[in-house]
Length: 470
Image (cartoon, rainbow, N blue to C red; front, side, top):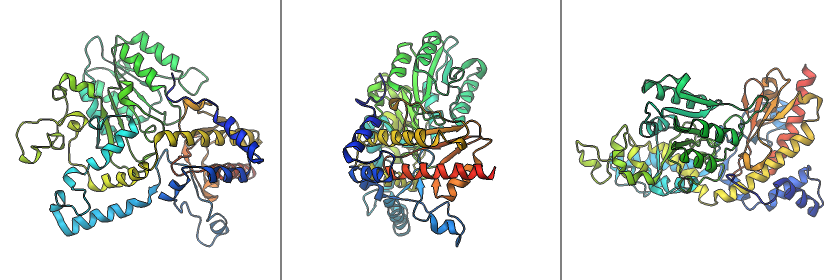
């Protein structure tokens, strides 16, 4: 069972709509037609499109592309919501005018002593959890460490951790350091699963086979919901179920999945999860993160879970009485350490206020269409070009196995640096992964079909420009 299923391929839907509108599927006119009919089109106005990377003032490029900034980099850093600045200025005013009294006397109804509660409810909806299963706290890797203190409890028999061999480096470092703290050698205790030879992504069947083969040795299965490099969406419910049946604890790094794909952490019976909020959740660079702990662990008395304790995780009713003994708040909130940054929290609030206008289901429906449109244009217009230099899409072609991202490998190109400069020259912002991969992420909450059409045109022009220089 896949994480998200569709009744018809989104490209087939787009073809049918193009035929009905009597427009060429690849034309700018059809992209504009799709944008006009998009029920989420107004959300784009809730975000600020950057004016960078700007060519030098006075150059021809500066005027030629001033109105064509195409931002397809939400998988690295989401755009700033328009409302965020006002929220931040309000907090600065409260600090200036109320000082410490802002913790309880707040003119905008956000007392700092409860600031995290302004975003927890919406965050819980986005990850498919009960409110008490979610805490907005810390940063991603920090939260992974805090959660693994509680959930990685190795024995001599069951001590291994299963991860992706190409997981984001921070996850690899965190896992290796955790097993080392417990006296194990990462070369033995970490099972790093890699794709089959010649393939770019992991097969679900291989993940399940590994769990079945090594299940009695695996303490924790810790995967990313969406693989950062390839954009592969893992079958989270199936993997979770198989791992739980094998007696493993299951955790997910949702950095590239949260706000991108539907999540149902509670229903999937996930033990724990962590995520950042500055990608598809648009909170700002390095902003506050999130954590999930399933409510079922309350049945075993949540207070007895081993953890690194901190003041903000203490029972809210007695927190300011400063007791000597730690009494954790119920649920994920008991894993908090320090009081959260007000600036960081309201930066996330600015985005959550936009998410309240839609749903992950609506965003996913649009995302499937955007990514299918992008894939079609790349396959039909870019791949056949001699200048494409061995172009290959690393991301799965199955819409149900990918998020809002296509990773483009230029296998015969000696580095994509020159190509990135040409794209920037044309007002396009995408992400480079050295030496020869470009990640393109149309975020449905603010990107549209015209963005995709413009990107493909700019990519074609850029490839031709690089070829001429060589």
